[in-house]
Length: 162
Length: 302
View (cartoon, rainbow over the protein chains, first blue to last red):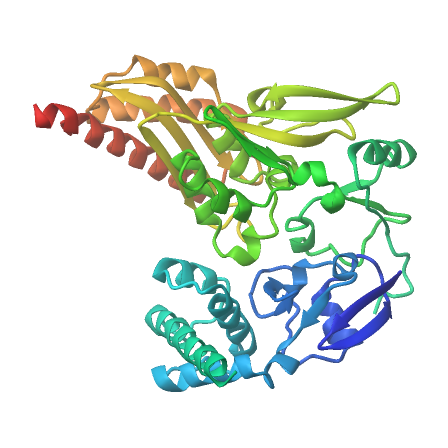
């Protein structure tokens, strides 16, 4: 099956099995083995990517569902301005995710910041999908709240300049 | 890897008649809603079936609709659990909201659909039991003599004797109607992980109106993911005859009656599942006892 999609800003036509999970596409076809895990649907949360701007578990997305969609992995996201906000929040709070879950957690943080989620319980629930205990709940809440603050300031500065 | 294997054909009907014609051509096609269950199976990829056909329901607009009036809410079967939470959090019954909230992250609830949660074959989620407790009805579309028929059915009528939701062959749930309820006692509780440890997980849904010391129209349903749903009118009737609060001996009698029924239905419950079921039942009885001993706010004000 031929599938047209955009992965990390590149428009591609991939010849794939129609039910192949996105996590395997990224690992095997795109060579993105460092930042995307494939747990065979065990919901480890370490395969998170952004599809059309929303965080999803890539092991749950079959190939036919990414037709015409834009997929962003941590590989390209790490170079964006949005990631800089998250990094600043890590620094301000003084808590960093471990190397195993850094990519997934950062993408989920970004998705929460993008939606402006400030509710403590919702943040904790959302991040509970990542099965890694390197960050405590309180730090995660602080990171999201700090990142929202940093991003808001950036947007205000940008509007003032224009 | 596995690219040489035959790739399943994907059919994406855009309306129900188109779906019917595809089903006529490919009666053994598997129906794909959100894919959360299919993709979490260890043998999901590569598909073992040769010439597999998949019907993806995501493009059928009718199944994404949501409507509400003052008596009930009606959801298309492709409405996701996250959409249910965001559209009806303030009006939908508490037991339903609690059930969706326990599922966890929105990374899952954004993909899981109401229809898929009810009609997954070979696995039972906690969702149908909650809908049974709420006396929900579903519109079932099915093929008969090469024609598509539709029928509104109570979810209890879709339960077979093994406690599984069973649809007619090539049947499809297109809409689910949930009545707004004023039951003042609604409990949903779950222990264990339904997806990762189905052998030991169990959930319970309960709804009733507590009027002084008696329960009016109580409904209780247990879900054992690898076995099915345990629901019986007989158990509901036993709850109706009780006067709360119950003392220890009454609680023990009630537990033994309920376990006799559960054992007659599912013989192979794991010991942990039994212990957890007992714990959940005790929690509910404690809660009813507590509520029955509390003076209602209206009386307090007098």
